[in-house]
Structure formats: C-alpha cells, structure tokens
Image (tube, rainbow, N blue to C red):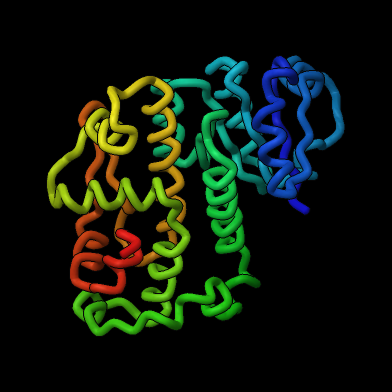
Length: 264
C-alpha cells in the first residue's frame, strides 16, 4: 500500500480528499502538528522518508510552500499541491518547472485522482533503473492491439508506439474531451474559458478553471514518457492551451488512435 502525507493547518477540511484517497486503497496520514513542527524547524524524525506522496494543503500559504518544496526535493517522493478554486502564479510556475508534480482539488473525482496518482507512480518507476528492464507490454493489456505503419513517418520505435498507446488508453473521459477540443483547434490556441464552456456547457467558474488546470496536468503526466519533444499540451500563460503538433499528427494520421480519443 502506498502512503500519502497531507500537510495542513486544519485537518477537518481535508476529510473529503482523504476519503477519496482511502477509497483508492491509499494509506493517508493527515497532520497539522507535523506541519507546525516542520515550519518551526523543530527537531523531528525523518518523517518524509516513509511516504511516496506529500500533499500541501490550500491552507498553507505560498511562502510556506516555497520553503517546503525546497526541503522536500531531497526526498524520493511526489509533491502535490491542493487548491480550492484557482491556481496562484507560483503554483503555475512550480508546476511548469516540475518543482511540484501535480495539482489537485476537492472537486476532483475519484477517477481523476486515481489517474493522477497512477501517472506520478509511473514517473517514479521510470526513474528506477530496475524498471527499465521490464517489458513494456506489461504496462497495458491493450498495447498489442495497435499496429500502425503511420508511426514510421515519425521515427517511433515499437516501444514508443506502445507507450503512446498506453497513454491514450489511460485518458479519463474528461481528459479525452480536452484532447478532442485541442485536436479540432489544430495549430490554434484555445483559451481556458472556451474549453470550460465546451466541457461544462455553462459560463466558466473558478472551480471549472481549477479543475481544467488539474486535468491538463494529468494529461501531461500520462504522455510524459512518450516520444514527444515537449509536453503533450503547451501552456501559454494568459492565452490558453495548444496541442503538441507531433501528437496531433500522430492521432490524426491513425484511425485507431482517433477512435481511442473520441471513444467511437
């Protein structure tokens, strides 16, 4: 069982996210006491070495997050920032520079949390040398179903094709919807507000925008180890999102991959 530590100033407001994580069979430890001890730099046991994930609550201010991130980088764990309604500029910067590895909120469903944590776990395994010797076929029961000559034009090996296939199969319905929206836009930038309006069919709220940011993060995590020169989705701050053009061409030029994304 994987262990998750939630650092917070108020354990009561973490009950909802804690229950969702426990439903996914994670052992969750929520503590305000250890956050106070750590922020005051008091002597304490090497607590973080026992956890694979640390969630920094929205109750922790930016200056405290900055200090925590610097210290937590010394440990082999994934750092997750929890937000309530919207991202701060520091959250965005930390996410893009990989100083934090994901952003979640109470609005995220169990499905979305499951895929987020799975993506982070996969990233951790990729950094483990022993994992490099495992067969890629073990990552998904579906990878053997795809055999496409189209990928020869993109100089992708069979292993890279399988990794891309696995990433596509692991997209949640809302993540597939975002990919479809960006595919239709082609080389154009789509604003965050436009995407929210299409997905939820109403004027975007702060909650929608925060949920979209979390969704984009999860998509990037799932495509992290495919043969893309940069992130699957390009974030242009103040403008919106744009799909990686190589990924766009791969999906558009393969009927099977298009069906995976559109669920046809």
